[in-house]
Length: 423
Image (cartoon, rainbow, N blue to C red; front, side, top):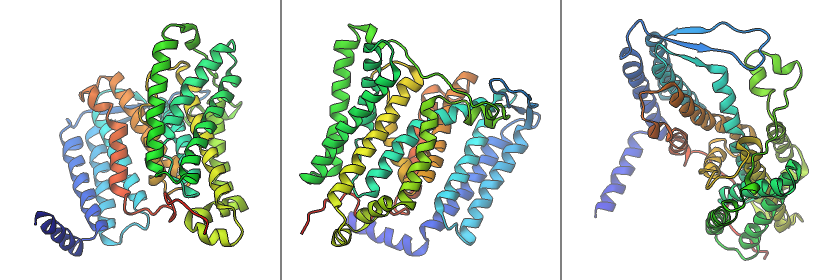
């Protein structure tokens, strides 16, 4: 009875107000809350100062002092304007409106926490990109798999195993980072092949297959960490790919330290983003991949080997997920820690949806999630009034907001998650 009543109320509410209009109202209310909570609640004389300095800046930029109250009122009005436009005409791409509103909200939150304080904004942007790169690689993995019709829930597990393998092999070979990277990539392809066989040949539910791999990865890495790495600590020493600044470009103010002072894995990730976009949308392989993901039977009638396309794309996805895991160790902390991926594989899946199954869209989404992660680290250092436990929730809160705002709006490949059986 209550279920029927709830369905009736939901249908009625859907008839009265569309989802887009509801989000417009939410934007307006959120903007007003920003004005009151982050703007008018701050003393009028408070100043939030942003610095723009990076390593080796040849031309130091002056700091930017912003009146906290006035700035946040303007940002809140910006969110209100986005909501008003959404109510009036509606954005063609709702994720653009959501991304803009979220960005303004986060900036207002940052300035509110920074009242009468100083923050190196260039450093925040650097941390944002570094946090976004493994998410980007994980999202590219998801895109390659899902564009061919296979859901890859196992990105988290592939990343975690690659983290462990990269560190152990690097240390076992006397610090050879490239051998450690190659071994990690091989582990990703192997795990992806298992997922592909289960999902494509034996038609196991793809979500269940991926979940099983994640559980296996958690168990095996925890066991090896406890039984091997804790005993033989020489296998878990710190080895890192150092930063490789690009001459001239790395000296550009703000952008130089952010984009052109990465390590080799960071540059590879950005290059792969462009490569995957080109392959998917400008090559015969990409056309066949998208055809298999949308209508495999029609593709089959045209002579396309559906199974082959899916197998290869899933294993490419495993390669990309393993590269993401390797970046966390060989390009980040340099050693393996228990459950060090911390759900990044699942955040990468959210970036796939938020980015509408496109590489550049996934990169933009990864930057949003990476900014939330970098923000919570910086606010902890600055001694924010918000408890650290709540700050640690920011990346996952951003994921929830993205999914709540977009699920049901974006449309993935039509054959995604559906096993294909040749007739």
